[in-house]
Image (tube, rainbow, N blue to C red; front, side, top):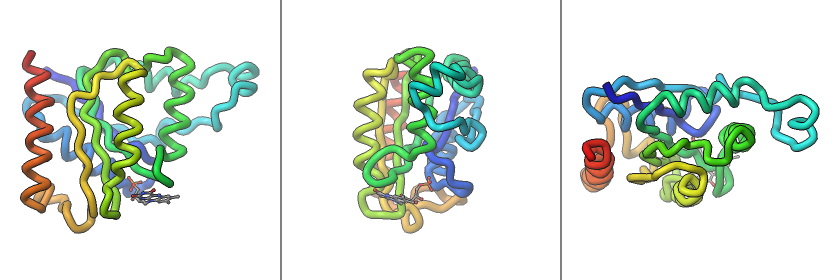
Length: 179
Ligand SMILES: Cc1cc2nc3c(=O)[nH]c(=O)nc-3n(C[C@H](O)[C@H](O)[C@H](O)COP(=O)(O)O)c2cc1C
């Protein structure tokens, strides 16, 4: 069975990106989903001196092993000041010290959402481009603007046009998996 690793790139307890990642992963039929919380991967702030003195924390190795144990990554990027959250960037930096191509050739469905009208479009762009340089293959992207207006836990994406464009991206993921 296809194994999906899903997470919101945020450490908010009620992360809207975690909700979107879980929703998107659940739309792929016949898959086993592992939904992780970045709070379980909290490490000291990355620093070259800290790495030299203390080495790479085991949580970074755990995260890398999780990536390698799954066939598809569904990641929803939270945007802080136009870019990555500190929680995600710290995890990215530590894990990249094990291997720069940390996404291990896995296909990625890269998403973002925010309460605002741009839906985290800036960080989605950054993350999508960057993932390609770090061993990932971004096969589809989707940004959901105005999360509280456009998403419900029971019904998913409420706006018809946004739901259609999500569906289009989801089909790209499925087509890739079917190859
Ligand atoms: C420090 C900070 C900076 C933020 N910067 C942005 C931003 O640049 N763009 C945006 O759309 N939302 C921004 N927001 C709002 C977040 O999108 C919002 O908190 C969202 O819930 C984050 O996703 P999460 O719930 O998955 O953590 C910011 C929030 C914080 C706390």
